[in-house]
Length: 177
Image (cartoon, rainbow, N blue to C red; front, side):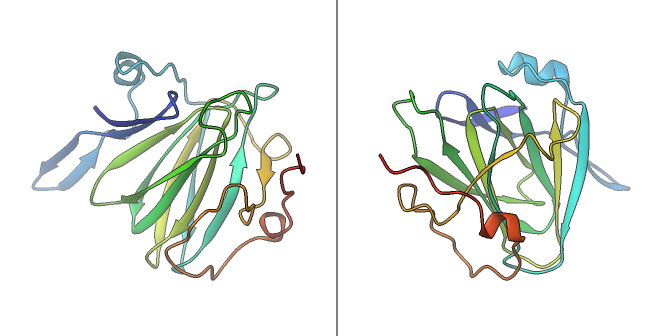
């Protein structure tokens, strides 16, 4: 495993090994030992997949904070998507800054998202499949949301949104300061 980028002093974009044989390819998405060697202490407790049939399927800004310190990793097993990380730590020098990068089944990248960092995603191809894991069981009820149209953040999406759930549309904005 190779660390490609470090964002906001806590989040990592990783390239994981891909092994090929006459049977096809195998990506080693997670190895607790390899992650620990990269400075990431993570124990997977929940693993799920999201299948996005349409280009433009959007997952709004979701995050965990110090009250619910959940850390996440994700990768794609099919398709392509634009992934976003947003620094939502009020005391951070990079507060409200964001970065984006493309994930695909072909580039076999994995992103590590610690608590305090918001995450959003939009599919760039039909039938995109996201593999998502956390170090806590569940997520509903403890995940926090922020409206993706928040002007203080200013996310730029590369394609129009074609599918979005109501709770992302109605997510709260930042309080006025």
